[in-house]
Length: 369
Ligand code: SIN
Ligand code: CO
Picture 1: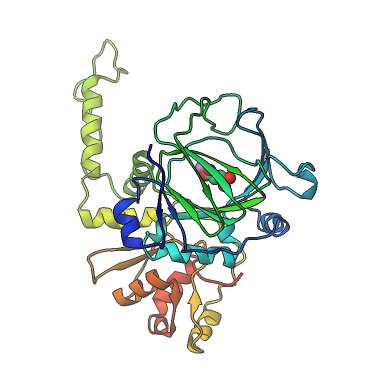
Picture 2: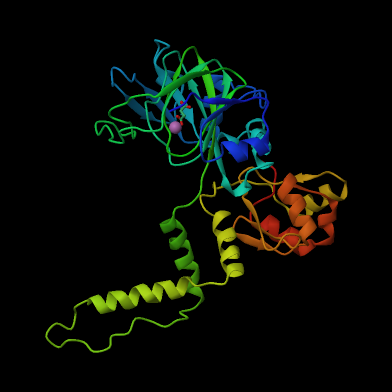
């Protein structure tokens, strides 16, 4: 594996052409997040019920331990080394953290941005060598982390631990990532990051569904609509064993399933947009989403922002895009749909489309917390 290249200053076109889903790079001079203190991180996690873990251990000693949250100060080891607190979904709880996602929304699909996980590590802290199935940007907010990477590796897992850690870790290259720099990793690159001093890393995680996950959703949507294409037919049962599932029946089942998936492109695009914006939605409660209050803010000229957990996609031909938010189709003009997709802001022009505005509010995409 070659040494990791630098992309500094960041250039979205160059990143997409040369690195995206292909090879790692270190991006400098782009984002400079303001770290959260450990106390602030733990408090946010507790107040908002965010998934939290404490990982302790060392790769050489292979002495990993994992404690699931909620965590407080008394759960943190007193020795101040070799441990990491990890809090997922912090973007859903902190506007300051969510702002970072806006930078990614300029060149990556909104619906692909899954969450920002913040890890706060003491010197020597690490979560062990592992491989992720998704793209990730590992943004160093404070302190320095040494990353070891491998493109070719033994994928056997160490079964002694709950975390999916590689059993035989052989790094192929390594690098230091300093505050304000980030390491981009495409899926399938094994990695191991160790804090060289007390450090904080923000992982901007992306996610796309697998084929079976897509089929699961499509099948459910299609099943409630119709059974076009018919049902399995049993031509002539064999009286010796009428309960037998025969190879011919299996072949017929395969053809039936293929026929059910033969959708027009436009129909499939809509179903896909519906799935991508409703899949893994972070449950949001307690939004102050009174339609009259939203309308009066817009009338006063105050832009209204989509909630950080809302997922959005556009479908349809260029210039005639339709809007999908949180799995619901919103019937509004294409320019409005594009504006919302680009800014995640609603302006007073939405007041001309009260039904669309009401539908948007009903999806749980708008409101103050
Ligand atoms: C970390 O932030 O400590 C680990 C993130 C990762 O390896 O994916
Ligand atoms: Co990882």
